[in-house]
Image (tube, rainbow, N blue to C red):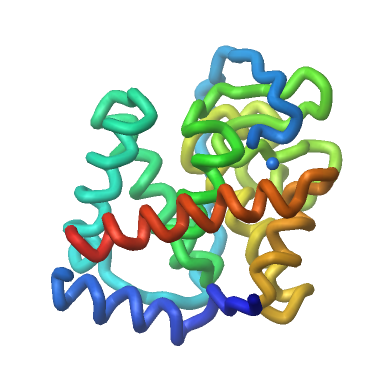
Length: 202
């Protein structure tokens, strides 16, 4: 199945729906690290110029669902959801896809660190492969923070979707970067379907 999930057209669909109000973790071995205090540096917006006010109903519904299913404080779930929508707008990627990837990668554990691969944070970014993006948000330690990690992870997704001409399965396989791609893709798709339904109910 070929699914194009980035670009202004998808963003417009998300906006219309809202106005109508309708890698597992890449090896399964996760440790917790202490987050530093580092400010993220925002990149210029590329597409999806939607006002955050219009997204509030979806953000609220998604945050509530994420807090309930993943046993997070509501404030943490709201912060993660806001970060996904901000990064999605910045990089032209469906923010619900960003949340689906984070759900599968880390179960929304912002301090998750894979001791084998070094994959870090919510979207399990591997620092050694993405220094060009990481340096723009404050370096490796910033990956333990919500907004920088989601910003970098979303930029990686955008890059892979571009490289794969919008083919979601191939982009997700590249994001995983290891074996078990079919099972991983199925899990992300299941989260994407669920979270899309929740967003539309907001």
